[in-house]
Image (tube, rainbow, N blue to C red; front, side, top):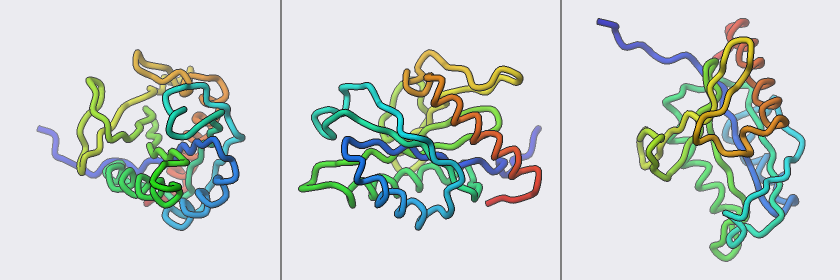
Amino acid sequence: MTAPKEPDAVKLVVSVFTADERLFPGVLKRLKECFGAIDVLSEPFALDTDYYKDELGGPLVRKLLSFERLISPGDLSSIKLLTNAMEAEFAEEGIRKANIDPGYIALEKLVLGSCKNFSHRVYVAEGVYAEVTLMYERGKGFKTLEWTYPDYAAPDMLSVLNEIRKRLLAARSIGRGS
């Protein structure tokens, strides 16, 4: 029998997208207040989807970021609830203007948090589900799965995610952690 043990620390990643790029500085400031220094901040990505058009407008622009401080994967549910509260802070007249979605990179995968259940998501806690969105294959990088969103399969996104994974490796090798 294997004894339970604490999981290895992981790299918190957050996707922020909006139709109003003027919101980015305020959202990034709030994220830094909650999670500390940002170590990777992507260039803006166009997000090509009509799913959020009625709520957020368009065209949508996304930035992906990660933080210096590592976290426990068990923190995903509380972080998701916190980012949901941040979305409410930036809402106008009760309408969300920014989507702020957390996840984490472990050496072997990218996991995203969601408040929506689906067949490939596992309940974590507090109304939050976790989804393995990408798997890491040694020597090949992240690979997509049947349910991977097309924007997470894009070469520019994969490049940023691989850079964040390298930072996780570096942080673990020098002993930084949560």
